[in-house]
Length: 67
Image (spheres, rainbow, N blue to C red):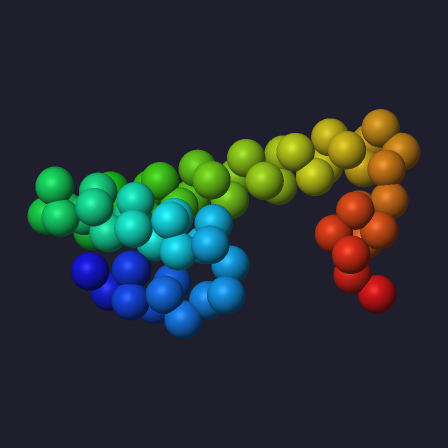
């Protein structure tokens, strides 16, 4: 349950629940590749979404609140 304990330090509740889900997926399969693969698909989806939004003309830095 390392995923859960690492995410617990985060102040973001979504991160915590993602950590619980990844920890649960490992606990059920006892295969570390399962949560790694889920995390990789999640990251790929975020990259695709941000790329799509940028191509549509959105300012990604403004959407993310970055300065």
